[in-house]
Amino acid sequence: MEIWRLPISASQRGKLISAGYTSLSSLSSISSSDLARELKVSESEAMNILKVASHSRGSETSNASCSIVEGAQSAWDMLHDEESLMHITTSSADLDNILGGGIHCKEVTEIGWSSLSVIVNSVLKYKLTTAFGSESIIFMLIGGVPGIDTEGSFMVERAFQIAEACIEDMSEYNRFLRKDFQECKIKMQPQDILENIFYFRICSYTEQIALINYLDKFLSEHKDVDMSLWSQVKVIVVDSVTFHFRQDFDDMALRTRVLSGMALKLMNLAKRFSLAVRLVCSCRDSWSHTCTNRIVLYWNGNERYAYIDKSPSLRSASAAYSVTARGIRNSSSSCKRIKMM
Amino acid sequence: MTPQSLLQLTSQKCTTGCSILDRLLYGGIPCDSITEIVAESGSGKTQICLQLSLHAQLPVSHGGLAASSLYLHTEFPFPFRRLHQLCLSFLSSNAHHFPVNDNPCDRIFVQSVHTADHLLEIMSKTDPFIENSKNQVPVRLIVIDSIAALFRSDFDNTPVELKRRSSLFFKISSKLKALAKRFNLAVLVTNQVVDLVGPNEGINGLRIGNLGCLHTSGRRVCPALGLAWANCVNSRLFLSRNEEVIREENEKSNGQSCDFVKKKMRKLYVVFAPHLPESSCEFEITREGLFGVER
Image (cartoon, rainbow over all chains, first blue to last red):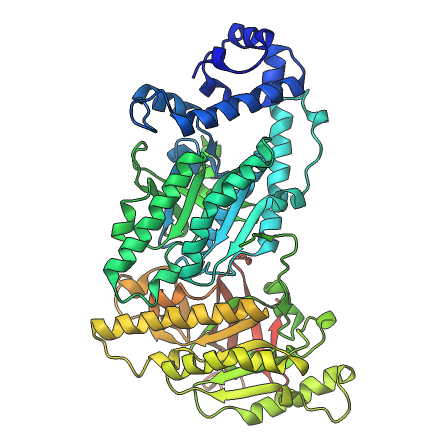
């Protein structure tokens, strides 16, 4: 969709076009303050433009009257979309590198197997970073990854710890990046981050299926309340998908059907609401067809490694990382290597 | 279905009765979570369980849960005499929290378990049991000592049996978790070890958690029940026991005869836990109980 079809004032439209914004997708990844500076308009005005833009982007995907088949998109549009997609950082630079910038929105990423408490930490870390990027997150805690992290492995005290570290990191980052912008930013509190994590605890697979069916409604409610970015859910973390499916299922075919039905629903959610879905689960072959990316975590000697097992757009690669009190970081030995160079 | 607010979720801990161990565990054994203790026999698993079920009765202001406990034991006999001994020392140091002539042992409900199916049956009765006991001191701690004993005898080494076995693991753990969530219980489970024979390969050589390998009594071991059960617990602690021989030469008899003094070195490791960093601590077991030693 082109800028000139946006329902905004002519002067605003002119400013947008003269600043080089021609398509809606080019507006999707810019913050209101940046836009305000570029167009030389007030911040509230810029916010309004972004609101209208994201509204019509939403309606564009839902009605799609111009396309031949409902919901169809040309490859060109998809490329545009992909370029404007947000990536969510894991806050370990090495991991971000192999992931092409971080976890992708609109895709289902699975982390599987072999590493234990790491997974929870990475989930937390990842989730909190996103919260800082001013979106809220649904955190669904479902069941066990190998070793730990079953229901109740989510520890608020750990979340709080990582949230604090995150805020420190971000304020440092801000100081480097935009010195002038510093003073208008109110100091964030860990409580603010925790408030934006919606936490569901699941005790059986029936509950799990019910919740995933309900998510659609939940997300649309949270989308309509307020169009400000803050209230949009951008990440769903399911930790873990398979735990409850490992008991009481004698009929393997039924289990496969239920699981893949659930995966399709998650995919659908990811597309419609531009979410990143991150699953934690144990390996299952039938399941691996349904997720877009799969990352395998494992131990190599005394170091933790992440390996991209499956992805349509990334080449397979692995990177070392470590779990610290502050969350997931680059592995300490690789830091040393960089320092030596 | 409504999401829970994280600000209202608090994680309560049950003290172990030793400030050094509590510091290592960030306050003790967490509620609404399953903690497992892995060790070979004679390392102090049962000692921790007994001590915890006594200290759970302390008021919340003193790190306890102000609650009674349910103790399921699968290894016979139940150490009543040791419990009584621990109870006396517990009372002497915490007498002011309890009325005169009160016996903390009255608030430890002991139940023997014979098979895995028996355990499931007991757990289905636990719901009404805890609910009905609410007018008295509520149950806030479940101890299973040990889970491995149930699974190491009854099952053949055939694919069908192994599948049934791991399906039981998940059944038991999800039932335990549902109980833990509903009544905000702390759950402590003990597990045995198996020796690791041969090269560092195969499923038993697979690294789980912080420690590359677990050593006790000079042997390499790994937790019993394998990877499937490792999926079922939230945190795992490992107790090691090693004998250090200190050689003291006796100069008097021409340096020929030597006295060997054996000293037990016990250590507690955090293998994995969502809230704990990799850490370890030395401890000793005395008449009064199990205590950390600061180095």
